[in-house]
Length: 177
Image 1 (cartoon, one colour):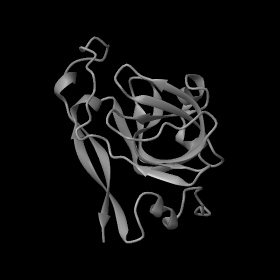
Image 2 (cartoon, rainbow, N blue to C red):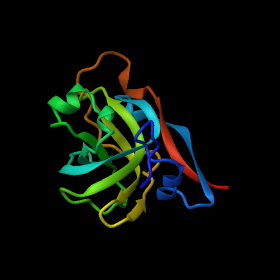
Image 3 (tube, rainbow, N blue to C red):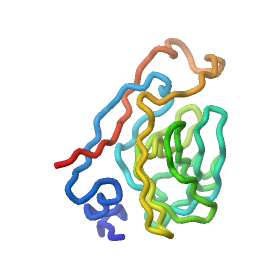
């Protein structure tokens, strides 16, 4: 895999991980009412690291916690270190068809980099593609639009307004040129 010298981010040749050679990628915003706690830091980003932990969440998501490869620690905030053991939370959502990576596997993830204000840490949520670096296999799986989440019944703290507010998150698409 080649990287841009100044950033540690895969260069344009790596778009083939998500799109074939005759395609281009674009990110368009979509509205998601259940994700007001997710604040987009950057859309359509690569993150590379080693799977450290996998957790099945009550809402149907699977947290795949990934320790950063060299050059990718900038994706983490202080709560990723204190609450997530120096790992980035990445989320496979209900309806996505990714093979579950194994603990210790090196992967490259493509998705939306967000700050989760309910927890205080950064995430890749949702994941749009995973390249399993140990095998070279690439799997694309767009989340169900709109994503389905189980409601917590509004019992968590947070302040007025809440429930019906929409936020803008990004949906990355592959469009053939």
